[in-house]
Image 1 (cartoon, one colour):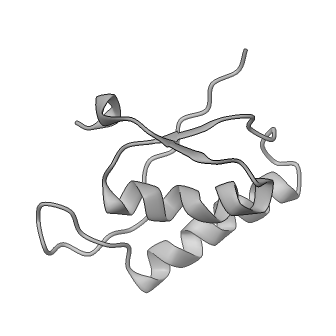
Image 2 (cartoon, rainbow, N blue to C red):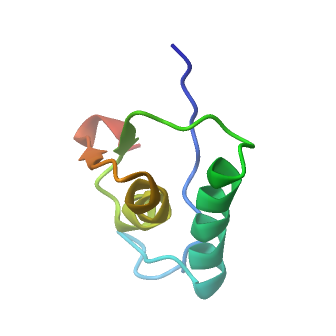
Length: 78
């Protein structure tokens, strides 16, 4: 089994509790999807994310492309 970990894309600084991705961060999330589509990373069978909005926004384009549901885990919050 292979595990790949990705940190969330670029986020706004506010609100400090749970900021959204910046426009650049949204492009970075799309780029992650593109890299998988081009074979730069293996295609995941599962996508897990923390409940933080920025993490969900980062993983959503890839999950939609692969038609894999996001599995949100509170255990991934730091």
